[in-house]
Image (tube, rainbow, N blue to C red; front, side):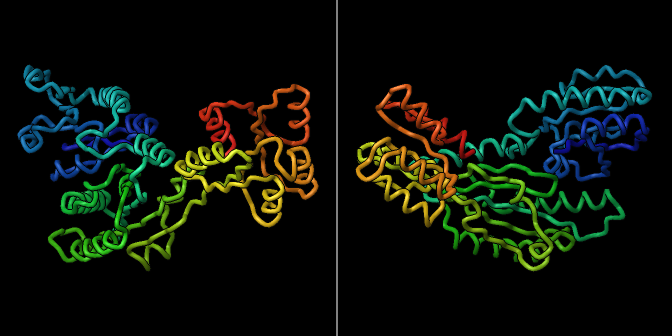
Length: 386
């Protein structure tokens, strides 16, 4: 993800400076006005200002963005504001060093500067952890992707960015569905992801349609140049194998033909078969792993599980060693004969070393002795199912 330095001055960035900033994945944007809106959008590493324009900073006096002042001489007023850094005009190279330090410190923060929107890496980490742990009371989980497409001319880069951030700032400050989100993070300069729980989807979509209409017909001067799109992803299944980058992408058909996309059942739950004659164990494990987002099917007999696998797919089998009509030895042999490659974990009170080796040699991926810790089993599942 890029970081930005905003320039409120006429400043020539030489090739060496630009190359060094590029190595740090830092982009320079030059402004003439609309400072506050630019800061809200880009959450910049720093704002570079000509000392003659310091009076313009009154509009952002509560701003926490580090400010680099280009001065002709050393300025004794430096101590008046703790986030001012005075640099002589002929020491433009100092901007690079300051930017590196500011970026280093910024990346220890959960939030971007001047925003309650999370950075992409932190936001994605929180989202994935939330999906893997579904507390009681949460009925559903949706991810809203808000995407802005600049339809204006790309000839004037400064104008393009100004229109884009003005449009984004207008939408975020006007409509409250972002505030109601459990989590919102910035994917890139024009894309945002918001995570919702217990959402009334039908009313939510009506709200988005109303938002689109109001947005294009309202008082946002730049809306006519910006194409606004929403994508809603149903996350009711587990996120063990989710690739979030897939959700951020909009293909040509989606960009030109639809304003709101709804993708249900985007992620398929991993299916687990539980086989044990002890209903207490199967009930506990089924409750535990259903709440973690897995599709759990219970059998009391390995023969029933084997017949099921002949017609259906599963991602994992967790079974007792012995059941009424079939034991694990025969079960593993038959799976191999039928070329069914579903991994099998054995849960058993039998601890005989030769028996364990025999079962593993027949194809079981793991052997866990009873009594066992559910946390131990969790670790095995996470390793195998991702």
